[in-house]
Length: 249
Length: 355
Image 1 (tube, rainbow over the protein chains, first blue to last red):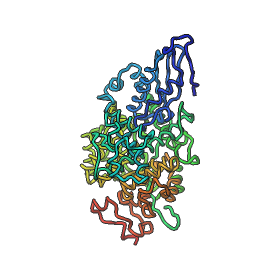
Image 2 (image 1 turned 90 degrees about the vertical axis):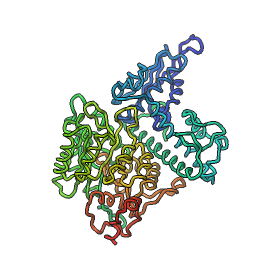
Image 3 (image 1 turned 180 degrees about the vertical axis):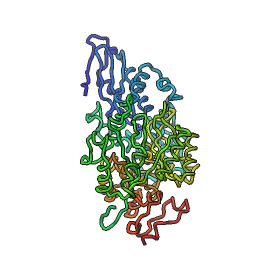
Image 4 (image 1 turned 135 degrees about the horizontal axis):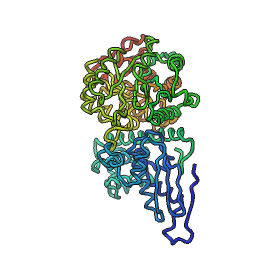
């Protein structure tokens, strides 16, 4: 695939020189597939990333199939646009989704900052905030399982898990991620917030509701992980090459 | 029929196709969609064992002889259920229609069951076509694809009033098995097209119908599980689960099977190869050999025994489609009644016959 180009304008004032492609790629680490709750970089969705000497950035994205759901595809392209265009030194940003049935509508809509409903005129009634929130709630459920499983394995029972606050859980990347997802949804994420909450309301969970909640959290994680596995396999079959920043799982 | 270690399995392939997706069948002006669709299917085949991969040209259009060999001669299948998908906006004669399936199948009596399909956006003409197909092909089931493009619309859901009209007609006609395949598009596009809550509503409102959710609601397995556990007439179609995960992602396969066994239960899971995406041979052999791995992360999942596998491989589907199963394939011990039997009050039919 395209080699990342690291470019800079010699002599440009600090803070305004174009970022290198590596810096753009790092910014793209913050863009996630909303369904899989994983960065588009590690999933292999970034096929190229270049920055010209004048600060014009171009990112090309690819997905596992021609028919991947257009709403999630739009979110990834729009989020990539936002992440890259916010970088100091970037003059123009272009994000291109390749090989997708709705490439034209998505690429054109994102470039024109038109929003989803206008990009799919007559086919959508609203923007994608609610859809994104639905999937963040799933990510919170899956993240709850990732944090709780080791605790349960070490002998912490359901009722005891329900008494824990976030600062009583040993620090880990998984815990940090769970807190971030909860914060994004406006759910309690501080030190004194309960570990187990209802992702729809933020209310703490207790009593009989806890074992079912934990069971559902696990199923949600299995579902997301299995989907990610299928997506990786399809992407590999479709392109046969690694994306920039792709990580094997 | 498949036999392993002295146990005989009656194999019903609950989901297969006889399609023509070659360029000669592409609708002018829609070539990119026709090509994109079959290439997407072909990528799924890539998740199976490499020795079973086909070149794209063969995959686009295979012959009747190929199907008979792959499915019946080599693939152990006793009875196969055709699940048509039309996609006439992209394929001139349709991708695989009820007619195409039946024209081929009628040369092989007793081997095939012809499901038909409908699309709620086709109005009165569609109802008439459904009646005709049931009359002509004896369909007891239908395959619904929610993401089919139709005259400017990119999809539909089961709770659309027009769909309820068709479900009522299915009830009247005795088309009792509704296979639901959720696709990526739906109106409006800002909603989650894969959401299965419409199946939940329809299953509650149409208790006489069975709803088989194909590929277990992938990519919404969790929503499907939580719904299926509450609805006695909702079943899991395993197409894609076995084909797409058993070889490519064995660890996830174990977990997904565990989740399905826990929430849905072995009495409501149906094997389907999704041929020609995947050949049945390796799936049947692999599934019968498969055991839940001895792994600490899998200990709280239910286990399967030989009877569980016999049900999933064919006996469950035989019940739904009234397929006569010879005594030698019936369960020896009757198995454990599942939630379906308990809640629906159905007699444990297969218990006595083989004992």
